[in-house]
Length: 168
Image 1 (cartoon, rainbow, N blue to C red):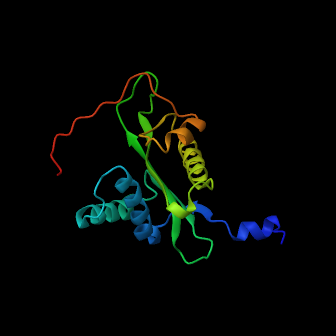
Image 2: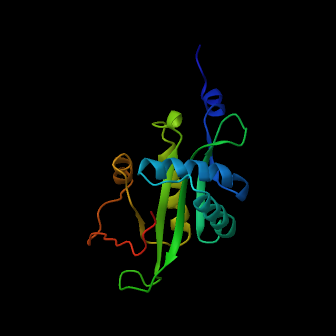
């Protein structure tokens, strides 16, 4: 059987900006990413904090792009979250606004189909439309090749971190 492009499109997830109605599915997908880097995303405290932040901030310096299951059931198969942070101005960024991609997560059975690339491309377009000139992220080993293919690379100075509060 030969599938025509119009038929294949009907069986592809639809990429779109999230709404607050997607919050539960977004949290489910984000938990996949956090669990993959050995962070416990099962806590009620995190889920409630995430739900509150998404509800309050979505559309106000926070964009989440999702891939909706082709069945139209409302379930999501992938998502990516990006925020705009304001820092002090620097010589290379007088606006002081910087983008940060917090996560990209795809259900295991939907991986390797280009959904993460589509989500990232949409987020990068959003940043451009918002006048953001630099976007940062932290890459997992699995995600690094995709990020590099989109133009991400190491900055001039290595990132460093200190934990000031023991969360575990």
